Image 1 (cartoon, rainbow, N blue to C red):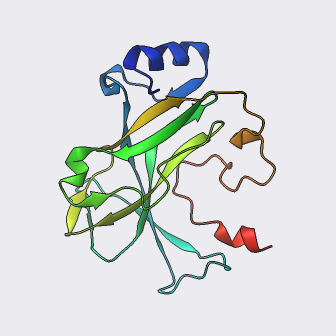
Image 2: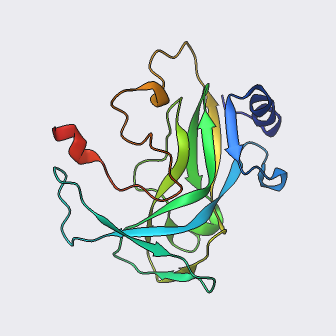
Image 3: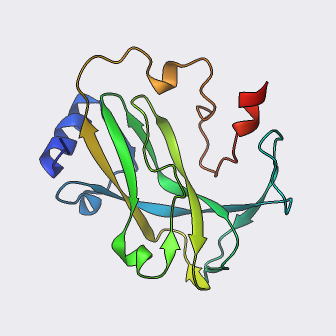
Amino acid sequence: MILTDKGILNEMQKGTIVIEPYTHECLGTNSYDVHLSKYLAVYEDAVLDAKKHNLIKEILIPEEGYVLQPGTLYLGSTEEYTETHAHVPFLEGKSSIGRLGIDIHATAGKGDVGFCNYWTLEISCIHPVRVYAGMPVGQLIYFAVDGEIENAYNKKQNAKYNQRTPKPMESMMWKNFK
């Protein structure tokens, strides 16, 4: 079951969903719009290694925007910090972004109950396209869960993405090989 706008507001009042900053105009019928932060990053190496900590180089989006290039994976982040304590959040790209040929996630559109952070976006594009900090890029959809949660993400000892940061986070796949 997907939460409606009133359902999202009710859960926010209960504290099971947190969205900061919250703007009522961003609340849709059954989703909440999120925006591209000023931070992008690209990997430094041409060949990435799943067993290695691949370093990233930060890019700040200037006021005049930044042109994304096809064939490059950009890591971005949302302006919004979110917490989800009783629902499964899904992040989907806005259709207007898709119509510009931009994908905002390669595989990681689902969050976990207990996810408390900014969302890292895995951005790619089909054509060169100029993007701007603060532009709407996605929408969060909240699904109700059935049953109690034994292992919330923010309580897991081995969770790789619990460090709160407004900047995009590189892959921590290498931690799986330790």
